[in-house]
Length: 339
Image (cartoon, rainbow, N blue to C red; front, side, top):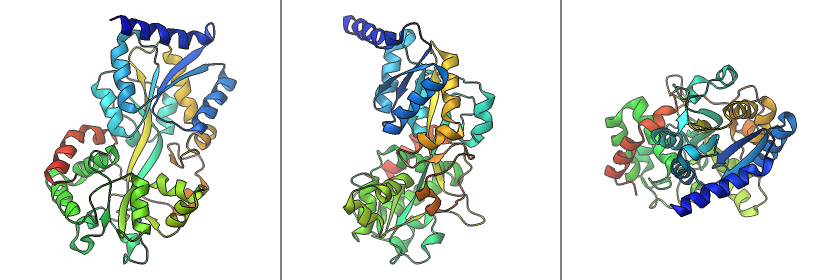
């Protein structure tokens, strides 16, 4: 009990540093220097001070729950709709009402009841060896389970939220039974046991360990624009593919980083103003710049490397389904033997 009291006192002291000023208190699972620079620009323009606490998504959700009605947090920013669903299930969010956000953010990237909204987009696509995969531009997610890809697929483990959300999206579009059949075929086509992160899958393709991998687009974009020579060499050997682009196909799976206003937010109006600012065309350019994500506001400019990736059709499924279907997705992956 004492430790909880001391924690709340410490938080109060942190957020009291701007006493007498307008403020917004942000708990964020994003860790990019460009985000911090953007928060400073928001303060310059509005006079509202941004007080930031960073941590892992699950850690921050638990923190808000433990703080209860005394929580100083106004906004939770996290990555992946699956984690936003966890915040929703924890009952720590309140509906946010903003015509501005509704105009700027497509409905598929907003919670149906307004509990959260997307701030940037992340495509989970395919990275291929263009010399080894025939007609790679026409690939679908379903193709990864086909016999022709036996022993040729790299992907990270089933406990990764990005993979769970991909499977959840397939449950929504093709049904649980078809998704389970797909997962079983995918597992049988693994070139190796799942290991490492998305960059490791890309490196696996470049090194010839596998011919195709599943990865979020920005991992390849960062490798292509970074100063690590080994990563640049590996990235130059592969191609990024937006799956399911055919006329009758559903489009590439798109996830989000997003935010919700917390149920006990002491500065709700400032929180709404902050989120509206993050979706302006000016802010989007900086907000997504540190990680080469796609803007949630279609009027905003994309990074040059994303222009090189080309245009694509995205899945129209509302991303709230990624969280709603998460438990079933995990069960399917477990039954399929996806480690």
